[in-house]
Every structure is written in C-alpha cells, then in structure tokens.
Length: 193
Image (cartoon, rainbow, N blue to C red; front, side):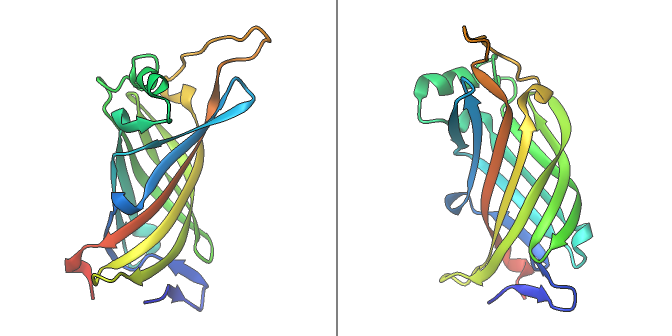
C-alpha cells in the first residue's frame, strides 16, 4: 500500500482510522545543552500513543503518554537525578501527557500540531512539526504508518528549574529542550478496510 494522497490538493495524510503507537518500532527522544557547550541526548523507554485519523484531517486527534521513570541518558547517576524532585519528580508525576487541539496542513505530508503538554503538574500549549513518512502493509497483514514529530520546549515553563551556576558565568543545564518522536503506528483491525 502506498501513501494515501489527495492529488488535487497535494496532501499526504494518515488514512482514516484509529492507530496505536508500536513502542517496539518507535522512539521518543530529547536533546539539551550541558554546561552550555555539549549536547546531552536522552530517551524514554516506556510510552504509548493513539492517532484518531478523521476523514477531514482538521478533526483528527493525537494523544500520548510517557513514563517519566523510564528516562535513559546512558548515565545511571544522571538518570536517578532526573527522576528526583529536582527534575521530573517521577514518584509524584509519573507521566508526561500530550493531547492535540489543532492540526494544520503545511505542505505535502507536513503538518503543524498544537496541543496541551502536561509535565511535572504543569500544562502548557506547545507546537510540534509533524511529517507523515508513509503507509505500508507489514508482513503480518497490519497497516502501518510512519510519522516524525519535532518540537522545542522550555523546561522552566513546566517547573523544571533546578540549576547550578558555573564559574565562567554560565549554567550547568540548558532551558531549551528539543524533542523528537519517530512513530510507527498500527491501524486497529476493526478500522481496516
């Protein structure tokens, strides 16, 4: 199966139906500056999400949750600190959630997705740029869609304000966080046509 393409308007879109994120073939990652010179990369191992693709993409919905305790930056001591009350406070705020509010088509398979991100007990509207990569039928007969989502958030906006000053006048941890989700989602069988 190829892209579902509305040729008269040049829109590549997710076919109608309910799509569940396949965690085993997806990733949710972030990047943040460390000591103002290096970039630390991390990922979350546990997450889930749903795409409700409507016939009119304006009516579609995207939602997802991430388990904060599943953070992994390839450094166990740093991960433990990130789970603590200084940062995510995973014991009291075990999930990060996103619920879309509006979806705007930009060009071809590119979209702007605005919605509410809830993290650390704070909810703020954020904007993500999304690209529909394509749709195929996998060897097991499932319809599968690929989507990339990208965005930038301020950790301070969500109450993650722990900081340490450097002797040179800078700070240990940047405020700007670049987030990226590479999603493979499977259409629920009752929606398959």
